[in-house]
Length: 576
Image 1 (cartoon, helix red, strand yellow):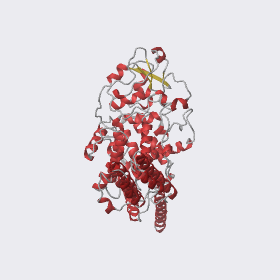
Image 2 (tube, rainbow, N blue to C red):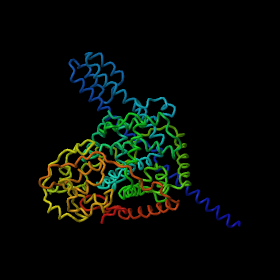
Image 3 (tube, rainbow, N blue to C red):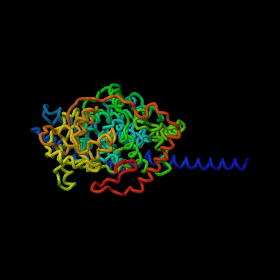
Image 4 (tube, helix red, strand yellow):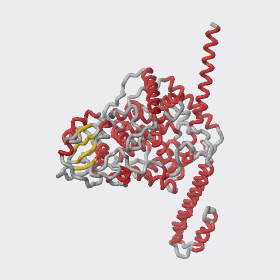
């Protein structure tokens, strides 16, 4: 008995040491107390001050008799003392006080912003802020207060859009998010961190808005998809905190977080966003309930993204991170992806670990934490964020025979600068080359797949295995006119808009070059995992499978697909 007891105690001590080591490494990986990159901060502040100075000089240059004020500004080219700004106004004609005064106020707002970026607010300070006026300040506080959860939030709100089959299809077809998931998540974090930390009116904020709009503007994309993705940023952290975090958001925090992303969404030209939290949340939930059930592409996209995220952690931390991701899902997301729930002991353990980390980090002295300058991000220059060309996986016009780099640089011959589209009728017309049906008929294989719908030829080679109905839906129609079959099936407005990205030609006599606008036909459908009986063994089987997939992914991490620069297909990819 004594020998058995000693063995049990020895195992317990080893497990305690392993758990302690895991928690310590997890804290390090979550960047709770990273050092401030002081030079990066100085560079960022000076860049903004120079921009402020330039805007004031530009405003004054248009004003007669402003030489004394301009001379004063030239004496303070690197910084502008607040008193000097006030002293400048009496030197100017009264009719330009408002324009210049706005420049003065903008400068004062920036000085205040740098203050709370460098010294994060306390809980008591935040509760007295205005959720609309101080939205970005509240965003920064929450990012700091819940920084242990931020990387987990990112995985969930980046994968939440996959519950809409059209989103899952498009993410998979471009290859960008699926094959370079970790980089794309970093891109998203960098974009909204620059917009919200430095402010939408700042130089960094304006450049981030312009760049993300340019990236999205290369594709015909549905407004509702953008709005739904924005809803993930707004609401997923709130839902997570209710389930797992060490404390829930207060009313001020919840509304401030919402309004920060509302302002960002408006800057991204997303239409229809409500100013009211409850109204927007109800729309977001309704979109989830009408998503149409899971598809192979939905689950595949989620697994492939998570594989790449987990591969960035050490092997013994991967299952705890996976457990936290699945435990933090709301039922809509988990069931749409047909994933088993985390067993209750796993949920309790995740909750306890986050509680310990959260309470400990909240008790630490407040130190500077500027997310857009964090060392774990891949870069901190706006021009380095995201991609500079249309996806190499999406087709170009049929007769475009230029080399891929040149063709992609010109967006495959398709329009750029597109705004989020409400209806397929808003897809701008594009001149397409004519292709006869006999030519279409030659492209009837899975590796070279064309179809015709309403006189427009679509290259569905990359889309074939991402189709929400499965490849079997399209295979009988390869090389043929599928207009009647397409018309018999209900398609969402989003799906009809996304079709425009696969146009390559038109058949002779066809007038239209854009997907036909058939109006909204979204139908409510049961989610794949809705009401499905799972056991704890299902969760552990998924964990084992993920470990094997990560190992396979790591074996081929450096391999590239020909002519694209993308990593090779991932373990879940069904393409031959």
